[in-house]
Structure formats: C-alpha cells, structure tokens
Figure 1 (tube, rainbow, N blue to C red):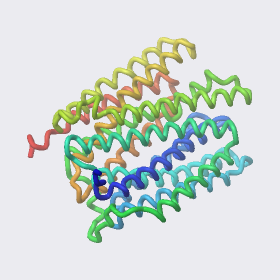
Figure 2: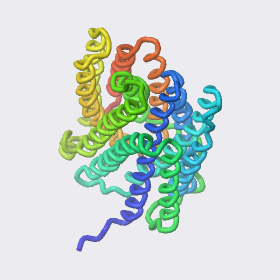
Figure 3: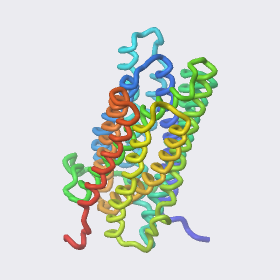
Figure 4: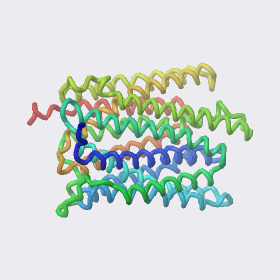
Length: 419
C-alpha cells in the first residue's frame, strides 16, 4: 500500500474548503448581477457593485501573504470562510425601499468583505500546493493545474446555482441557504483540520511581500492585464447584452433569461476549469523546461489576442443584436475561455516555480494582488465601456489588454541564462 505524502490530508482539507467557498462565490456574483439588474441598476452601477470586491483583493493579498507567513496558513483559511459567512448574512439586511445610491453603497461594502474573504481562502490553498506538492516529473504543474481547474469548475457550477436559486427561491432565501452551508463547513474544518500545514514564523516582515525578482514582477504585470481582459467583458458587458437579447421584460421572460445566462456563464467557467486541469498535458509540461514554458506564456497570449479582436470586428459589422451575432459571440467566447485557461494555468505554475519555499505565501499574495488589480481594472472598464461604446468597445478593450499581457510576458527571462 502506497503511503500518503506528509501533509496530503491537510491539503485535501484545504482544497475541499476552498471548493465550498468558490461555489458560494460564483453563486453570489450571479445573484447580485441579475437581481440588481432587474431592480433597474445601470451597467456602470452594476460594475460599481464589484469595484470594492476587487479593491479589497489588492490590499488583502499583500496582507494575507504576510499573515500566513507570520501566523500560518490555517489562520487565513478560517478567516476567509468566516468572513464570507458574515458577508452573506449581512447582504440579507438590504432594504428594497432604500434609494439606489444607498443600495449601491451597501452592496459595495458587503462585496468588499466578500472579496477579502475570497483572497484569504485563495492564497491559503495556492500556497499549500507549493509546500506540499511533489516536484518530480512535473508534479508541481499537475497539482497547480488540478487545484486551479477544479476550483474554476466549481465556481462555474456556482454561477448556475446562483441563477437557479434566484429564479426558484428569490434573493434572500438563496443567500441564507449559502451562508448556512458554508457555516457548517467552516465549523467542520476548524474541528477536523489534519496536521501538515506550516504554523508560521515570528520573524516575517511585512516589507518582504514586495518581490525583488524581475520575473515575478513581469509575470504579475502580465497577469494583471490578462485578467483585466477577461473581466472587461465577463462582469457586465456580456451578461447584460445576453439579457437584452433573451428577456422580453416579463417575469417569465426574466426567469428564462436568468437560467440561460447562468448556464452560459457556468459552462464558460467549467470549460475554463477543465482546460486548466488539462493544461500540463496540452503543453506537454513534463517534457519542457522552465524557459520553454516562459516562452509559451507569451505565445499563448498572442494567440488569445486574435479572439477578442475578431469578435470586435463582428460586433462592429452588425447593425445590432442578431441571432448570428449571439451565436458568434457564444462560440468565440468559449474559444477565448480555452486559450485563456492555458494562459492562466501557465501563470499559476510559473509563480510557484519562480518562488522560494520560505517566501511562497508572500510571492503568491503579491501575484494575486496583481490578479485583483486586473479584475478591478476590468470591472470598472466593463460597465464604463459598455455604457459609452457598447459591446464593440468592450471587446476592443479586451483585445488591447491581452496585447499588453503578451508584451509583459515577453520580458520574463530564463533565470539560468541571466543568473
């Protein structure tokens, strides 16, 4: 009988808790987007709802890396789960009779708390991979891809779950159900967490979170633009376009549109996760060196640029919403998801490959700070570009940001060649 690697039980527990968290995170995003769109929020106001969520991620990832280094990974995991439960419960206190500015401000604050929670949980799980995964025969890339891919598949199910709960039970009951389930999981993890994760080191300094590695800094810049390119269409533009095409404005029409939009968003995220999990095989990572994978990150970003560029042309040539355009967008965005997933998986591997074990939580925190900055940029531009220039401007902005990501990837270098 093969003996489990030391700490594997702890890794499994962290991953299971992270899956549960991401299920509620995906569901909450879809619930908030669709519920407040039906309440009359404009595209820019919808984008505002997620702005603090992304702003919170920038500071949280820096702080979380230091907190985990100082107090241990379990502390950040528990804090993330507990804060998400609190955010869900707080969201049920929204008064429908408040004015729209008050609703926007309240939901922004709650979403900000949820953003802090997400990044605490994410940093814990990703750092656990570096510390516990085997490194032989591409083992690190396989474990990173499996965690990241499965997380996104679960989040995709969350999008579908959120749309389904909203259409079936309404906003408040859906949020309360998610808070209850996540609360049970938090208690279980606290009571039964197996040993294996590091406890932290007292001498960790906050200033250490800022990386001095050029490769890590260029990778983080590339990551920022990559995720900005995704969220610029994902957060507001495409869901609202699909809602305009699919709903006739009636309650029945809204329900049908919710399910169809939720299904597409879920399918996109699940496909994205499945491709991420398969990225080591797609890239033949076990047979390729780190310098080759660095070059692959640039090449895949260049390939990705072609998709939003082509979709921008398609939208510009159309005279408005049409069946052929909707089908083209669905197919094109699914292709975008496949190529984007390989890019993202490469980044997730490279940050752990570039990091040293003694500062992995801080490098991962810095990396996800860049991730959050990109999501913030994409979120703000999603509502703004859709309101100013419609879908063509949204997709054109996405193409520009992918090009910037490719340029940053091109600056990463083989450490052996420059060392």
